[in-house]
Amino acid sequence: MSWKIKKWHQELRSHEEGSVRPIWARGQNVALVYPNLYYFGMSNLGFQTLYKIFNEQAEFNCERFFLPDQEMWAEYQ
Image (cartoon, rainbow, N blue to C red; front, side, top):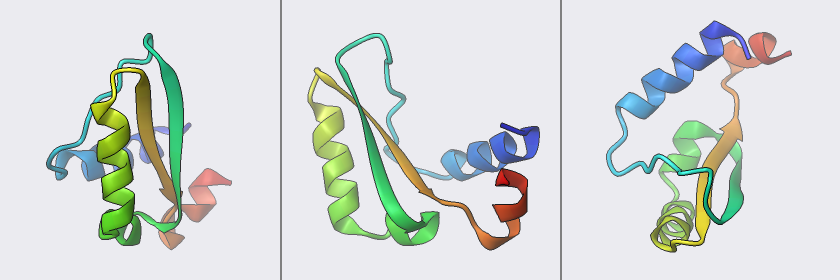
């Protein structure tokens, strides 16, 4: 992963409230994938509820994934 992508992700997470840093050594890992852009996924209450429910359980580690923005698409390729 390029530094530009990492920096972009860090910038997005710095503005979030209530995000959880997973402890990867415990339990089952869950990838919660929203098939659209970050901004649409973060405004979806169902998606947010699932993220909260998974992270409240001690046996799960949940991380969110979204499609990249148009300007970042070339960087991912």
